[in-house]
Length: 87
Image (tube, rainbow, N blue to C red; front, side, top):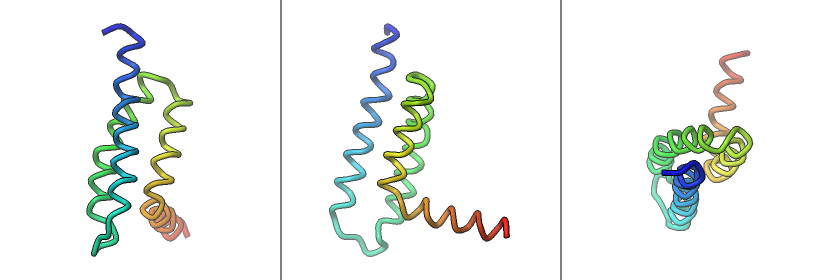
């Protein structure tokens, strides 16, 4: 694969991840989507790392912000946990 084509694959996978996360969020869930959030995190972190490696830190930070906006409650609870551990 050429350099630019290799950089497009992780970006395409990131876009698929973002669309899938939004579609999943539209359906009701008994556990408020926590099980799905864990799967999305487990799949999204390697994609994020790959996209950052191929496209640079600016793209990686943009994708991280997009993912955090979709999975905002796990991020909020993680932040609260960190604050409890520090204080």
